[in-house]
Amino acid sequence: MELAELQTQLAEISRQAQAAAQQAATIDALRGAESKISKGPLAELLKSIKSFPAEQRGPAGQAINQTKKAVEELFAAAQARLRDAELTGVKKLAADFDPTLPPPSVPRGSLHPVTIVQREVERVFVGLGFSVVGGPEMETEYFNFEALNIPADHPARDTQDTFWLTNGWLLRTHTSPCQVRAMQRFGPPLRVIAPGRCFRYESIDASHENTFFQIEGLLIDKDISIAHLIAFMKLALREVFHREPTIRLRPGFFPFVEPGFELDMRCEICGGSGCPTCKRSGWVEVMPCGMVHPNVLRHGNIDPHEYTGFAFGLGLTRLAMMKYGVSDIRVLNSGDLRGIVNPQRLAGRTIRAG
Picture (tube, rainbow, N blue to C red):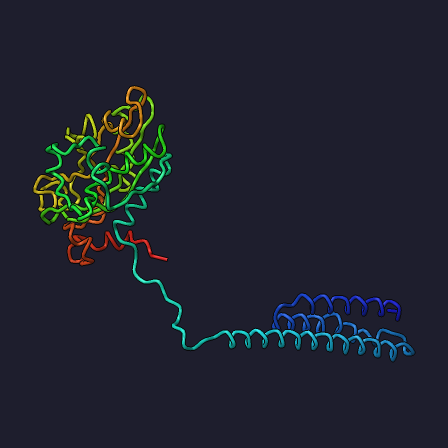
């Protein structure tokens, strides 16, 4: 090897050292880069001095040692720079730290079974083109009754024991008022669901509460039939339970739909053999539904001769009972897990909050 070739190699080593020192983000990375260069090409060049002619060995060794010293100084300066930056960061953290503040909160617990079921139902219907809307829990008599084809003298009001307020309003007895509000706001065609809390002044037992949750559903378009209603209802239940539940559809009277139906599903608590939850019938009503009554369409400023539609009131609380094996509806408002038939069914499907 000649001195000219040695100078070329030493210049390349210096260039590699400068690049490594600039790219290293930590002191450990910097030390690794320095060791790679010092024990690699520089060490090989030192070993090669004996291959030089005798008169060139002195200048060759001197050139190699100068480069080695320059590389060591380069990495030492880079280490000092990284240490200064690290120390500055530590000082900044120390200055920002307030020992009197409480520690960061750690999310604990899980979502409520009704919330889990509500989100699953919303996911299904949003995927079918529905929009999620809401409505007030303190409602007017017009939207809760009159706009739903339930005038003041209608006997159907007797079946909805109502919490009346001193201002003449009431706590809504169902989520159905959202139907007319959505029709008046958006007009046809229309696909909406409205989840929310409802209130009824009634006796509490294993399957009845004074506070419960529903999801109101409404689809209005041209040429909508009962076949569409049944298809949507079956799809929703299949997606929530991740299987095909056993259901039945029977006639039912609701003033705001014509014809009206009661969609029941086989009781998941007793398997259909009969229990207090299903009133010994083996079936639980989960979804009153039907075709929207023409009078309701008119209250929503929609021409019943041009548009038809279906509506349903999915009982979220009862659906959660069936999905998670909760035998007593009062458990869902109390937080008492002793009413759960099979705790593993709930634990296996819990969605962690946060």
